[in-house]
Image (cartoon, rainbow, N blue to C red; front, side, top):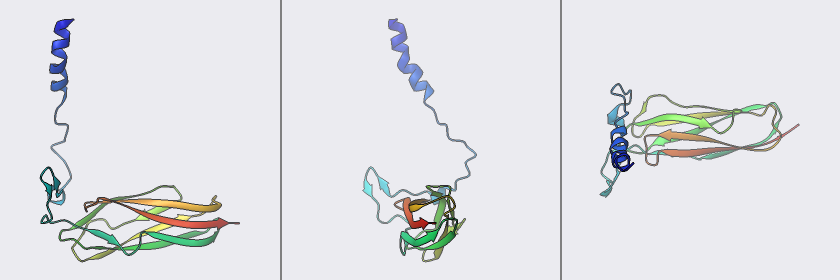
Length: 148
């Protein structure tokens, strides 16, 4: 039993390995993290996504109505911005976003469509936007009052 306990750390250490695929599709030039053990590197080339507004109220809707809104943003950083995904909190909401690089100083839009079919009352939905900026996560919010 004692020999088994002595060998356990060896097995645990051997089980830890590099599971990263050598055929990764991620362009390593796009991944930059200015936060490190030495602190924040303010000179690092980083994109910066900024939205004109992060919340939209559709107001009163009739159940079954489908409405859309365009969230306008700008890359205010000094490196290319890449939006990796936009994930709505509900299946009644769809988000369309630019695929590809957005150069520093360029603008873009995330189009959000809300379908009120089968919904009643106040509706609060979010779209999680993930990108290579700092911070990497932004929440866009939509609100609607759905009636018959």
